[in-house]
Image (cartoon, rainbow, N blue to C red; front, side, top):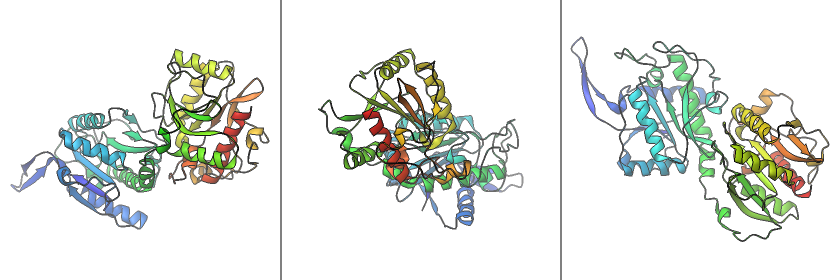
Length: 435
C-alpha cells in the first residue's frame, strides 16, 4: 500500500447533456487517476503498488505503512488543527504529501500552499530545480506540454525540503486527468499537463517517493548527539554548521557519523555535537571549522560577509558541501564566496595535495551513478578550494559528501559513495585541524 488519497471537502452532482447524472466529490474529481498511475508504475518498475481512500480522522499516520498521501481537487482545502498536527508528524517521520491542482485551480493551489506553510512554518516553499532527482527518476522531464491556457514548455513543481528530501510537493497545474489518459473536461480555463507529460511527472514522483523512503526514515531518527557535550573543552573539534535562508540542514545524522569515525580513526579530540551558527550574529571565535551545505539558493548579508571574512583571515577553515550536487546551490556558493573573498576564486585542488593524504592516501574515489552519468570514468577525488597564506581555507565539494557520511542510498544524488565520502571527509577535517 503506497498512496493514500485523502478524502476531504464536499460532494455534488453533475448532469451531462444526455441526462446522465454523476456524483463528483472535491477529493475525487478524477476517480481513476491514482489507480491508473500505479498500474503504469507497476509496468515500469515490476512492482505492484496499491492505494486506498484515507480519512485523516482515522489515519494512523505511519509512513512505513503508507509512504505517500495525495490531495487533489479544484476547491479550497480546509483542515482542522488535529489534521494539521497529524500531517506534520507524518511528514517529519518520513512521509510525503503530494498536492495536485487537478484543473490548475488557483483556489486549490493557494489553499495547498497555505496548508503547507501552516504545517511547516519553519520551512520555506521552494521551486524544485530542473536538475533535482524528482524530475529524472525514470524519465528526464525537461520539457512538457500544456494543451491550453498556458504558453510554456517547462514543468513547474514546488515543495518543502525536510532534510534533503521533499516532504511535500505541490503541482500548480493539473496532473490527475493525464494519469487517467484524458484531458480536463468541462472547465474552460483549466491549466493542466498533457497526457504524456502528466504520466512522466507522476511516474517520477512515485519512484522518488519509493527511492527516498529509507532516507526519510533515517533522517527522522533523533539526533541524540546534538544534546550532549554542552560544556566542551576548548581543544575539542565542534562541528559548527552555518544556518542560512536556504535549505541548510540536509542530512541529520551525517555529521554524527563522521565525528564517530574521526574518533575511531584519528587521535583528534572530537565533541559529538553539531552547533548551528549564524555568522554576523553568533560568536565564531570558538570554532576552527565551519560547515556550509544546501540544496538551493542563499545569500549572505553584509554582516555575514564580514564575519566569514574575519573567520577565514583568523585561520579558520570553511568546508562547503553541495547537497545532492545541484546546480542552483553551486551557483549560489560561487556568487556568495566572491563577496567574502573578492580577490580569490575557487580553483581545483591538485592531485597529491596534502588534503588527499592527511589520514587516508586517496588516489582514487568512487561515485554514485548520477556522477558517472555526467562524467564517465571519473575515478579521482574532486575538490575545489581557496588558499590563504599557503593553506586551503575554503574547501568545496561539488558532489555531496554528507549523504556518504550518512550511509543511506540517495537515488540520483550526485554524490560520493559511502566509503570514499567518509575517507575524504576525515581527510578534510584532519587537514583543517593541522594546518
